[in-house]
Image (cartoon, rainbow, N blue to C red; front, side, top):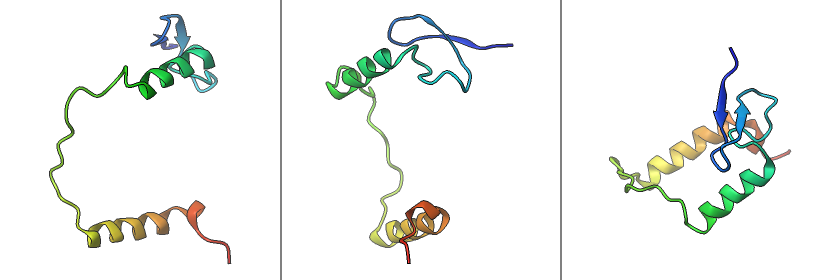
Length: 78
């Protein structure tokens, strides 16, 4: 079964599959219009984000170290 969704910008039907380059948008144009609306703050997340834990510098350093170890893209060349 093929999933079809409406383009969030123009409501044109978009087939949801890997070959749909701009999904959920139907085109680059609709994608850029939406991006522009976010940049102009026409769209926004309506609720404040609740942070349960205050991260200390040590926690942030540990998280960064773990991230760098697990992501070889960020390894500096020797």
